Image (tube, rainbow, N blue to C red; front, side, top):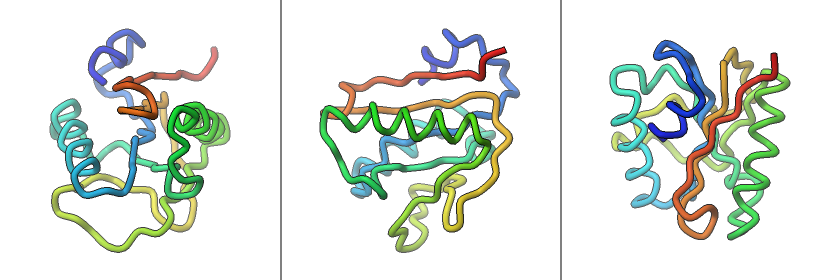
Length: 130
């Protein structure tokens, strides 16, 4: 995530929409939340987090592609899709989760996390054109 943000030349105060790998499993979600906190520090909760697999399931190798399309649509339209099936807060996943309903977002970029089968541990940053 750090390398992707640096390659995108984002300013430290930029707000990004985070498209989490978000499998909904305790171990994966807690590890990803911890990594987000490590990367963003005190500003971790400033960034809205979506998890598109909650809507379309885990598509293995195709997951990151669909996750990217949905994230880019959210970036372009300024509307973040909600995480579906949320069952309550987990203190180990203390992030700014986008829950029902969809939320308007004013962000500078999209940070997409794709791990294991879905992306072989990749983070990509997309920015608005112009």
